[in-house]
Image (cartoon, rainbow, N blue to C red):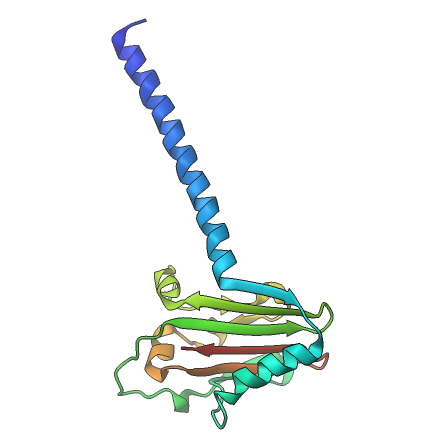
Length: 169
């Protein structure tokens, strides 16, 4: 076998090994991210109500930026977004959700740097939990959130008792 052919075989083998290591790293990194930022637990409704009460206490008297109206149509309270103030650097988007049918409490913490890296400035969340919020419907961007600063984004309960609370820090 020629020296040139051995070199190409070595390059191909090394490439496959590098690609394999990158794939394992991506899967491991994703699993670690989910482990660190998404916490799910089975809890009775009383425990969930207590956690929601504690979270809501921080926003006493504050109107949510997004209100879900009849027919689950989102309405954005633009009057709480200052037009001329400089943007505040936000750290985290937090979601606290409780599904009464499954007695499942989900606590999600999404770093804002990750949202800023997204290919679009609009965002949606919770679609797989029966809650379909799409920021394109209300034309809400990350810039809007940063101009508003830390605060309550959404406080919603449905007729079955499931609850969702979303805020920025």
